[in-house]
Image (cartoon, rainbow, N blue to C red; front, top):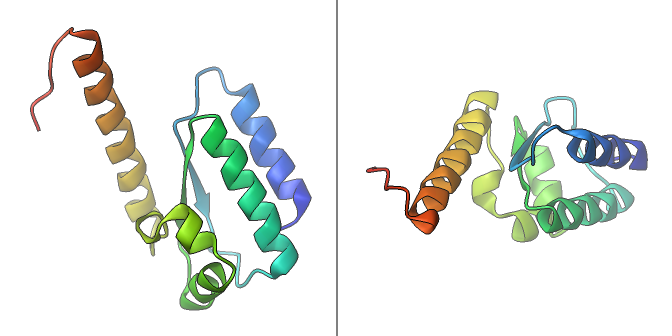
Amino acid sequence: MPTAFADEVQALVAGAPHPVRCFVIDAAAITDIDYSAARTLHALLADLDRRGSTVIIARANEFLRADLTRHGVTALLGASRILATPHEGLAAAHAIGDGEAKHARDADGIGQLRG
């Protein structure tokens, strides 16, 4: 995962008109990651976490999943955030957004969403 990728993601998140709560990476073209790419991904995940953004990796094949586990990315991100299809990734992103909307409404006393 080249640094250019991380730079582009950070620029997209920083330039978004609203806070980015979830960022889905379509990993269909990523077949494996090496040590350097894993370090870059660790740094990117830490940066996005500081910004309040959750990362989801979609379309991760079995070889990429093995590399993510070997390099500690799965432990950092959580296995539930590494998914097989883009539909699962988007559903997870919507669930995160829905959960935050519920939390915000509960916290400010405006009302509660019933799940």
